[in-house]
Amino acid sequence: MKKKAVVYLICVLGLAPVLGGCGQEDAGETAGSESSENSVSVSAEAESSEIITADTILQNSKYDATQYVILMDDYMNLTVELESDYEVTDADIQEYIENNVLSVYPMMVSTDKTTVEDGDIANIEYSGTVAGEAFDGGAAEGYNLTIGSGTFIDGFEDGLIGAAVGNTVELELTFPEDYTSEDLAGQDVVFTVTVNYIAEEQTLSYDEITDEYVESVLGDSYSSVDEMLEGARSYLESYNAYQKNYDLQDAVLEMLLSGCTVNLPEGMLEEKVDSVIADIKEDAESANMTYEEYIEENYSYMAETTDDFEAYLSDEWESSMNQDMILEAIVAEQQISISSDEFEEWVNAWVEYYGFESTEDFYDTYGDEDTMLLNYAKNQALAAVMDGAATTVAAETDEVE
Image 1 (tube, one colour):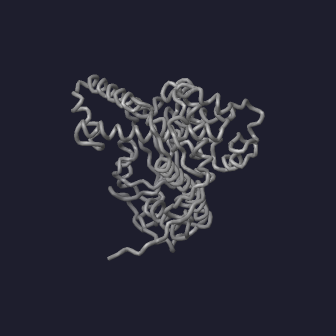
Image 2 (image 1 turned 90 degrees about the vertical axis):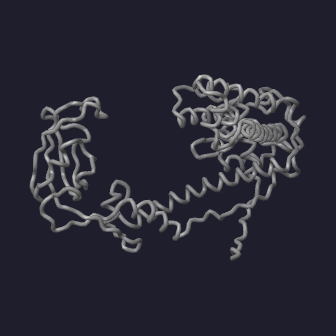
Image 3 (image 1 turned 90 degrees about the horizontal axis):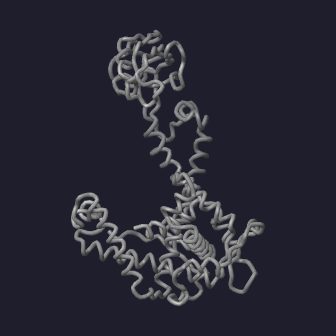
């Protein structure tokens, strides 16, 4: 179902921070342009690159969307109700720290126990050598190792049972043949290990967090409570900003779909659904399954029968095509032009994000360059509508018991 994947990728993820060049700030600057009475132009930063006009972009579309879409009145000035104000509160920070720090990293406290036993948490220093040479990742200080956890290679943890606190032992071991590092797989290794103390876990409450605790468990990132809290606030603010943008986008698309009138070209929907079903039947045949068996195994979360699945498929594609047509009509009416440099940057961001080896591989998966150019323009159209939208917060209602 490639087309559906493209629509989601462009219209939903396309506004995430990973994609430069289509953020709300840029859209706001362009929507206010005076280049024509009813137009959106490219940002000032792109003036030096090639400008691709709406007419050129829309040549890549099979249909003239303006012939099939009646846009809702004042769609560039929508009022959207959101469920939250997306503000980060002290309570949000506390919940985040409790769920992601305190429950994950208990405080390790030294005990008066003197000999390592199975199940103990031994705080150790160790270093390893292969043929007398140290190797990457073969040493650490202050490492809390639960004996019997299977964290280290066979023989390491068992070799510490009975070791006295303060003593150093040498463990002559062999890396497994299937070890993740090919250089070390099957090699003999000598670990020199000192047992610093035997620890026990101590669960802290939020109010008991100290700088010492923060540095002991998050020392690579933070060295104090204040630094950790500021880091948590920064993360949550970034996450909430992304979530607000996502929710705004979802709400705007829903308003456009309900407020605009779309009459799809005759046979367009049926042709696409038939094509998707044909692809699925090919996949089923390749898997030595009947069409019905394949649907049951892979799409039962959508529908219980093939008839229900095909009805679901038709509904989803109709919504997707309507959305496409609406955004293309906005590209035409707003005369959205784009910068070739920003388009290239956007494509490259997706290539990197999904780990494609080349731009060509990306195009092979999601559509050729002309198709993606049109999708980028629709993305910019959506960004402009979102930027023009005013937002309100839904009023809280008391639950009825």
